[in-house]
Length: 242
View 1 (cartoon, rainbow, N blue to C red):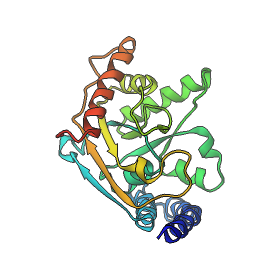
View 2 (cartoon, rainbow, N blue to C red; view 1 turned 90 degrees about the horizontal axis):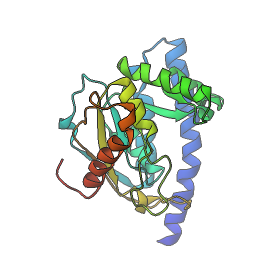
View 3 (cartoon, helix red, strand yellow; view 1 turned 90 degrees about the vertical axis):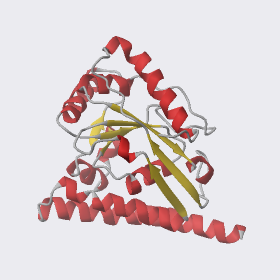
View 4 (cartoon, rainbow, N blue to C red; view 1 turned 180 degrees about the horizontal axis):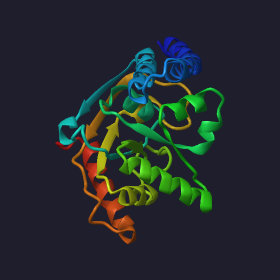
């Protein structure tokens, strides 16, 4: 059994770059040559993620979608335990959203171009003028109707526990004026924790909380907002009713 799991894990990691290449190529063809819409193109990364999850033996259950209005833009704030958080959200989170991604990813040949065409938002994570500019541009995109997902912890948890939320995403929500929606993800740490190479089969739960309005918060209250969102995410991870 152990040998079979290792073989499966290796095959999955061979599948990921191949699936990413094919998906990126199809996205560019659809968006540039066929002049398709970025919204319709989202079926490609959704399929990409579902293929990887199925190959890994991972199932995903999403609850709480009734808490959100599909006609409104949101910033979804989720905990980050594993790379499989991305696959699970991309594959099964039934909402039209884009990822906030560090600018370096947009420099990857083919993949970066596909991300740009699909409407993903580049963020400069330095502390200079360019970082402020990218934050302003992201806020404008969100205010104009683009929903995004971010991981306020900033990186994957090493121990699977929830860590303090950084305030950058809170400032983005306050500047854009859209609600923050807490999202609790559980199960992914057991599947593939940071530092391990091979994934295990498992069950992922995504619980969507109720929106937290940001219009009454000022930039000076970013830490209070971060604490409020973190508390809700912790509650959702614990399995509390949404």
